[in-house]
Image (cartoon, rainbow, N blue to C red):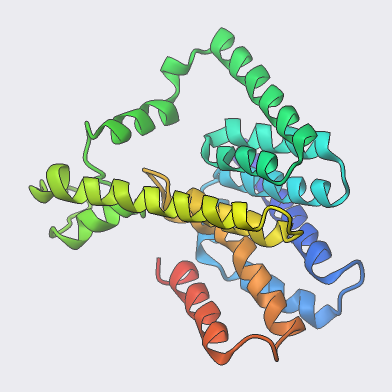
Length: 273
């Protein structure tokens, strides 16, 4: 069973990669361009971690990528269904649903909502949300009932926690500052990220930068989550792939500082997590 899941995950990664190549470079890209982007993907640690762990984020990455491709093809029902399934897989992609409304993809929006309601109804009837590990974990962390004690947790609140206390992965010590100081700071930072992203999207609601805006939302999914493991950064491959394409297609437009920033982002998210 694990081997079958591994093969399915590899297939999802390949399909996601090929769709991004198609969207960024067209139907017939040069071989060296495909090889360069493949080198980035194949050496990106969060992706390798997700593959090794058979993580469901690979399915979400494929669904989000497929949704962007479907929107480009004006297949809104398909795009909305993909977003709805992704949102009900692990909740994070729910940020894409208001985005569909902002961008006036109303058919896609209602398709996503209908898909979510259908899956939620079936899940409640068959399993019950009270038995969802993800739902219970998010509820506990949102309420502050538990400390963000997992070392690989890269959520902002946990980053602050690790900055102000000596951290032992096996037995994390209590952090006196966490409940009263660090957690409120983390909540404020989460809110700032979401509000800034919403303002940006509203200002560019008539643009056609679907890939860029989806990549931005993919990053927000990670940064604004109350609990995020290192392999969640697999979603950053969307933004890094766009940066790779921009460096190749418009090198004269990007300043040296932006190119350096892209390289630093690759190293920090892909190799030093």
